[in-house]
Image (cartoon, rainbow, N blue to C red; front, side, top):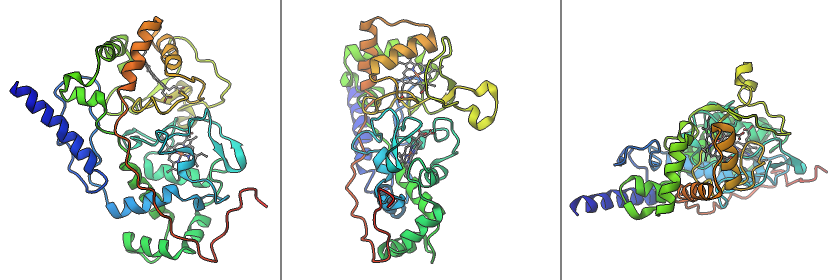
Length: 343
Ligand code: HEC
Ligand code: HEC
């Protein structure tokens, strides 16, 4: 009885720190799971600079960082939709069809590296990519800075946060990365179970987790993010067929052995981040699980087994970041007006 009370208070302590996440900075490692499992509970964001977070949040939502003046980070990583766009591949500048599925930004701070092929080492390095990518925001870093400098309230806020007289791209990407560090999703039902709340997940979900573990899924999907920790071959036992030309990790390392190795995606909030895989070809979780079982493990799940795994995966949906929509500083007369059709 006493033990149960202790466990319940542990779980609520986690919930509490989760809620306070966006108001204050918290200390790391306050809570540890009582179960010895390959999946670890998500810790609330720690040691964050609140000034940078607020600025980064504005930049994340600001379409003026794109050439058209219409596309923001949130266009493709919609925080109302699990930090993704729910499209097989994204839509970029002038309605261009993107080459690859947009991964969620939720919990991306837990990734070993960024992008499907890991070509950016961390969130700060990553954030410079989409702004200058002709298929995404199609802008340039120089032009981004020029635009920001025409917006007086941004000039003031950058000066306040970074204490420098000039805005540069390093400050822009650092602020965005700091905001992204807050996009963790603690307190999922599965994490509550890990922390000792026995009835946080149902019998069916427990059986789904047992199947997930015993089938070998946790060889690749483990840790806090249930993925994000390594690059693995897509189609280990049986080749994966796709029209998508992405090569995976070999595009970065140049090694043939790395061909078709992709960063193992996080399975946190996976219920929200359909469609699945780098080509966005799997429309449902059941379809993705069936392909994973066969191609990665040589295992064919019955429909009942598959449904149990789906039920388990849905317990990984955590508290979504509570975003108060930022009010963006107004443009000045010098700020370029949106030009979505390039006229
Ligand atoms: C036009 C759609 C689009 C826009 C706009 C966009 N992204 Fe992305 N983002 C993507 C796609 C697609 C990928 C995957 C690309 C790849 O792996 O090659 C990605 C990858 C990422 C990743 C890596 C996640 C992971 O698990 O590897 C992060 C983080 C990210 N974007 C943040 C941002 C930020 C910050 C911005 C704004 C500065 C932004 N994105 C703008 C589509 C977009
Ligand atoms: C050998 C490593 C490995 C094993 C084992 C493995 N996976 Fe994966 N998983 C991956 C990789 C790599 C991807 C990304 C593949 C791609 O996009 O081309 C992935 C993607 C997924 C996705 C899609 C996530 C998304 O956001 O696109 C799901 C769902 C998934 N795995 C579930 C499972 C399940 C369930 C099992 C066990 C039956 C399993 N995985 C076993 C490596 C693995």
